[in-house]
Length: 250
Ligand SMILES: Cc1cc2nc3c(=O)[nH]c(=O)nc-3n(C[C@H](O)[C@H](O)[C@H](O)COP(=O)(O)OP(=O)(O)OC[C@H]3O[C@@H](n4cnc5c(N)ncnc54)[C@H](O)[C@@H]3O)c2cc1C
Image (cartoon, rainbow, N blue to C red):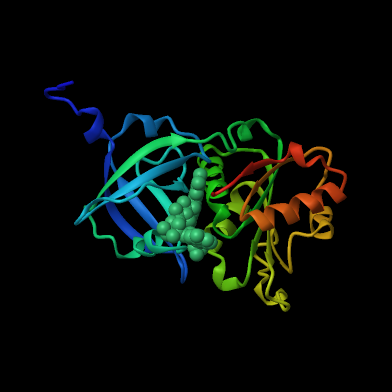
């Protein structure tokens, strides 16, 4: 249908690359600017399906969680190199057209209403939780949050300084579990007592040390193997794995 003077459905879906910013050696944030009303009503934890305009036409669609707060006018996607599409993200030029479908997904839908929250992330599975925490910071949320984030090494961790700062503003504890590091105490900083480092994985012992199991609501996002491991550990602590809200990136 013609929509003289206004934006038609298709042009509303077109966003443009504002910038790309490296988060670490293999992860990049892609910032998009656009004007699609539907994204103004998004919630933290939702995702978008994007196609990028290339010389030979629109790419295949790929899905990414929106990692910025839902209050932000731009869209920020934080993308780890996996294959061809994701490897091309750091090279994108300002102004490149990106078709955005969404927002989709229900992960973390009711998280604002939970007084005690446990987020467990593996690698780039942190993105929905970054969105929630950026949202919580914006609204001055009083929910108690424990975030367990597993990475291989300290070089895989990103947004670390921002997370540190958020521990000062919210009731947040961040436990970095580093699966391929043994000496982790060197990362501790007295100014940030709520940021902890543990060698290995988010085991039952690590979880039990920091959590009050009957009260907290669990959210899990990470690779399938990591999710299976964590669910096994939670079950060993007496938790019903079905009660854990999960997001799968595949
Ligand atoms: C809801 C949702 C949210 C997501 N959010 C994020 C996010 O916030 N950040 C993020 O970085 N990613 C996210 N993802 C994942 C992201 O969509 C994919 O990593 C991306 O689309 C992969 O595209 P690619 O072409 O670069 O890689 P692909 O070529 O698709 O490859 C991806 C991985 O699969 C492997 N692979 C490919 N083909 C095969 C095969 N035949 N057999 C075995 N292995 C194979 C590759 O080696 C690579 O490791 C999300 C996915 C979903 C569904």
